[in-house]
Image (cartoon, rainbow over the protein chains, first blue to last red):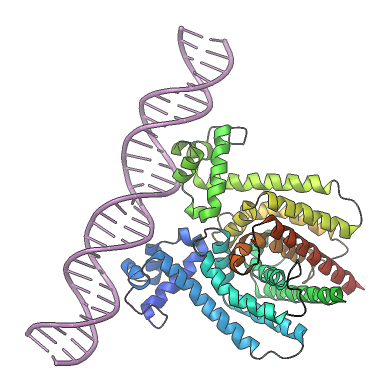
Amino acid sequence: MNGRTDERNETAAKILDAADELLVEGGVNGLSSRGVATRAGVNNALVFYYFGSKQGLVERVIERYYQRHVAALEAATGMMTGDLRERLHALVDAYVDFMEAHRRFPRLVQALAASGSDFHELIGRHMTPLFRWVEHALDGVAPATGPLAARHLYLTVSGVVTSWYSQAPLMAGLWDRDPESAAAADERRAHVHWLVDAMYDKLVADAM
Amino acid sequence: MNGRTDERNETAAKILDAADELLVEGGVNGLSSRGVATRAGVNNALVFYYFGSKQGLVERVIERYYQRHVAALEAATGMMTGDLRERLHALVDAYVDFMEAHRRFPRLVQALAASGSDFHELIGRHMTPLFRWVEHALDGVAPATGPLAARHLYLTVSGVVTSWYSQAPLMAGLWDRDPESAAAADERRAHVHWLVDAMYDKLVADAM
DNA sequence: AAGTGCTTTTAGCAGTCGCTTAATTTTGGG
DNA sequence: CCCAAAATTAAGCGACTGCTAAAAGCACTT
């Protein structure tokens, strides 16, 4: 764990990339240090030299994704104009854009969340600021508690977006087009926008 | 693989139960035949005697869940009355009831869907009839294609329900109550009903 | 030329993995 | 009681696991 662990070190970056690719194929328990080293074209011991343990390696993969995630959302929210509805749609677009650009990320988070609790606290810690941002944006529209609270709306929209990347491939047989195609992704994006409108409309209607 | 593999055999059932419990803790690759045998209080070799391989064991766990799932939904849909909106809410209740009674099931499916493709075809095969049922129920309300098609509505609602069981525990820190409590589950159920109303209202409004 | 601090490699320990084989025990019908 | 079938057991094979210690390779300064 002496080397520079970030992406500026070429070897560490190659290991991180390899682990990232392999994680989605077998989860944490399916990931082996030798498998990572082989795919990275690097000696097995270097995995532990740079990341200390398998656990540490996986944590760095997760943290790297969340760093990019937060940076992408901050860049997008800085340019948002219009009323709340328009800003929510812009936020959804930024969110979907990131997932489209990092398709393994939602699958990784879901796999880690759905089993094994070793990384729950880490993921929860990184999700918190994103959730707080949405909670603040919905202040005044969504009630503070109950089934319409921001936490439910947040979980619903993020769940709808992220579950697409794991569930859609299952439907390959009964979908008329490839669910992994760009056209299918665009259609799904339109669905999410439609869903946000439906929720927003009902939120406003309920408040009256 | 000579013994009677179904639940009528006490030993096989004990093995299935143990595998079911352990699967959610470490996914398929975290599951070991010895771990299963130990938890079931049974000899390691019996796992292979009854299920042939680890893969076969996991498949039986999945199939057992889907058998119960289909049976529960069929029992519920047989008693559904009222207009479409009421029947959809009854379907959601039956769906949530099943997940509440089998909290490991949605997490297992999500973990399997999010990584490793060894079980994608099996899960997809079992999801198909459930999807077809919803598609048929929404015939005339949802268009056949595009972002409002039944397949999107189905994925959205099922994704919202199932993702709760994996994502909610992550929010334990910033939730004011235990997300695994019955009260939190009730609140989430109310949210899903509200969401279905929002979608239904907008579907009808868009059609006019 | 010797020394320094990082990076990489080699080799291996001790444990677990899926799975099999063969022997043993248990079971139930004739 | 006997015997065949079914169920269970102990033992182990070969491969793989996370991880480590020690040595070697390397660019660099003195």
